[in-house]
Image (cartoon, rainbow, N blue to C red; front, side):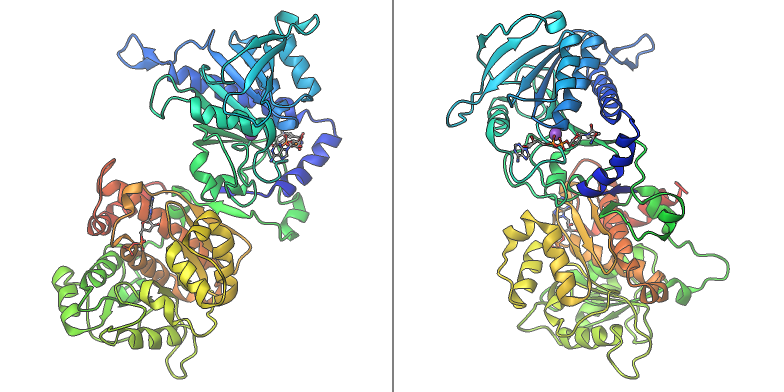
Length: 556
Ligand SMILES: NC(=O)C1=CN([C@@H]2O[C@H](COP(=O)(O)OP(=O)(O)OC[C@H]3O[C@@H](n4cnc5c(N)ncnc54)[C@H](O)[C@@H]3O)[C@@H](O)[C@H]2O)[C@@H](O)CC1
Ligand SMILES: Nc1ncnc2c1ncn2[C@@H]1O[C@H](COP(=O)(O)OP(=O)(O)O)[C@@H](O)[C@H]1O
Ligand SMILES: [K+]
């Protein structure tokens, strides 16, 4: 599990350590330098004696530091000093007249070059670099020498230390000009001449706490973050600019210490589940189980026009390990479902979780599906007298238009950005798909506040917000999963996961969000497993679920 804490919490946790004289910046910078050296050595791997690859030498590698005015730049400068001492050729490009004194002195002392970047009036995309001091020891006055070219473009590795958790709003000034110039000058991704970009703490300019990308950002190949992950590293759209991650432990006590931690309600703002988390929580049937204890999933999906959604959602529910799947809908669609999955029953009866909405329209001819879904949703929400105990429900696609009452948290909405925007507009918010995509956490949270339901917002990364304090952000799926019917498979899979823990989720609705996030992880892994590295069809994702779950359980 990766836990992300807001900038203010990280600062608060740093305070006592700094007051005690713990050299946090040196620790952070040393760890950063170690990651940079290892990444470079791997990129320079050469054939070894036994035919495999061995890490290459990093001596002489060109390192460009992009240095802003704050401690983030200080980290970059100190890391540069460590690297210069190991024989790398380090140049610091200063985007501000004043930068971290100690870091600058350390870099100079280690023989690094220092160049002040003059973005010039208008900050054209060709920042002019002026060498102000350099050479071993950095002694002597400024030897100003014009040195044209774009800061960092010709390096082997670029460390982005322009701003960190002190960033406010979009990157501006010289830092913004440096990034804009680099974005234009850099060779395409995949070109061996493109430098390896390492973001210091965060890619400069992303919304540290909200994951927005309000201005220019240099996409990183690696983000080395200090103390704890930050929400913006996990949340879309910023999460797509972070590259691989590395969290450096600085010994921060983010949840407090000892009894205080136990008593405190401090929780990470955003969590990303990992395979082992999902494996640990997956219910494995034992000798005392039977199909009803394992969970019966009721599926209200599909119409004569869209029978496929019913097949996909029901197949996914079966393949994810439901005790039983009951299909409700038009006879012709039910026959198609049973033809695809003979395990599915079309007779009525008790269910432990509902899947409502795949493959039927929000309005127009629906073969009676909306009425069936409305009744099931009311029963699931505990609003239908005599309908039995409430149970979790997945509300997808056409059923999203049926939320005319406030929902309990065990109802999970699964919109994509367009559907979420429509739902919010129906409640009076002026928001479109692009606005949701620009700030998914904000709008998912808004939908939760308006409806009471847990909200799983689908996309290239999936965000889940429920009644608990922690949001979830999963980015486990290949882009190939963006294919028609993939959402129907997710709905069926999630239905099975909720049915297996039905009573628990109703008793503790805040747990629905974690289960929904786990479903997003399994869905993404199944897409990868269905055809590693290539296109996938939605039914094949459902088909890959048993193997995916088995592979996850093998991690326990
Ligand atoms: N507190 C500490 O001792 C530690 C801090 N660490 C580093 O310190 C960073 C935080 O340092 P700071 O608080 O100095 O803040 P930053 O270095 O993140 O940024 C502050 C500076 O950036 C400028 N700035 C803010 N928003 C900007 C924008 N949108 N465009 C351009 N410039 C902008 C500000 O004017 C200020 O000069 C962390 O991200 C981390 O890298 C680490 O060294 C770990 C220990
Ligand atoms: N670029 C992407 N990368 C990875 N997964 C994606 C991407 N775009 C969408 N997805 C996932 O694919 C699924 C698409 O679901 P949805 O939009 O409901 O499609 P449909 O309604 O056709 O089933 C969701 O689970 C979503 O999270
Ligand atoms: K940075």
